[in-house]
Amino acid sequence: MLSDFLIDVPVWLALVGWFVGSFARGRSMQDSGGMWETVYRYAWLFGSLMIALHVLASYGVAHGWSHAAAIEAIADESERVTGIRAGWGVYVNFAFATVWIGYSVAMVIRRRRWPGVDQAVFWFTAAIVVSATIVFETGAVRWLSVAGFIGLIISYFWRRKLCD
Image (cartoon, rainbow, N blue to C red):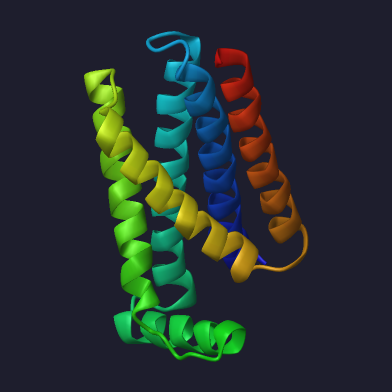
């Protein structure tokens, strides 16, 4: 169905952008200013723009531009998965999209990142991606995300071993 396509494809592409950017981020730690840094910035920009498209499509197609309907849908999903009715999750989604887009745009415009801010944004977005894909999702999205995070962890320890 077209509505599913408009909502799902952008979020899948956003995940690809987040994971590609995160792997490149790790590689760029040893090579700041090089190719991996550029891949990181642009993959995250792409992913963040896709999450904005996903939010817009969700609001327009799934919720008919009704904020109350979006809160209700998030509350239902939260209750289904965790047993806790939490409509405020919609604001967490807004914060996630805003932080990710803002930082990605700033990195591309300034052609640099800010180490302390970069760490905070990475861990904040990682927590949301884990929650959205591993806690709330099922099937292929869940298992591909688990594999992606395992890959990030392995690459982190591999990089540390090579650098020590």
